[in-house]
Length: 165
Image 1 (cartoon, rainbow, N blue to C red):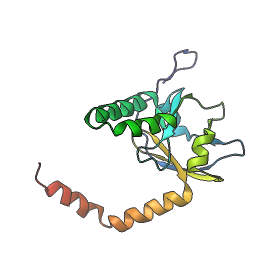
Image 2 (image 1 turned 90 degrees about the vertical axis):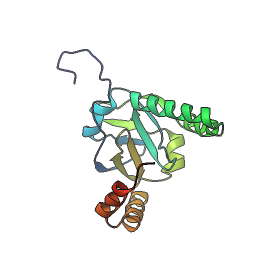
Image 3 (image 1 turned 120 degrees about the vertical axis):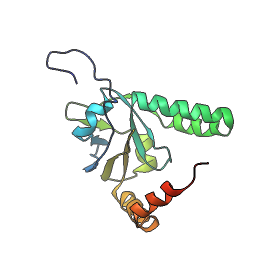
Image 4 (image 1 turned 60 degrees about the horizontal axis):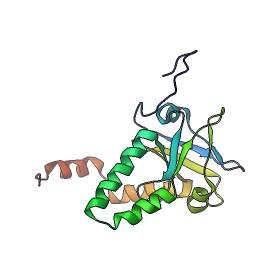
């Protein structure tokens, strides 16, 4: 972490991105990045789509580069991944940063695709990146999770009991 009087730039990637926050998007398309996430993001970061292409993702630079490397490796195994990479790159914005109030301008193209006319969003940590989605979508995802995996410990035990392949 930069100390007072230290001119070094925050690089990001200092920790896992975890937790969930409710915020809103202002009329200009800006959203507050919760303080616990800002240090991990660093001074500049990437805004793009989540890996499932269902929400907005905000990645520290290092984590975005790892994601791109993973996609490129998969493209070596199956050329159809080129289409996924093209879509990923099309919706990627680099060198994004927060203003003095901790707000970031979400790119209009991403807002139009994932948050049309939305004011209230859920901002949640996903380990390597932050997910930004409509509150309604986040609630539906939570309900689907609870329905699909009603007993998390039993699910973990089932997986742990499987033989390694």
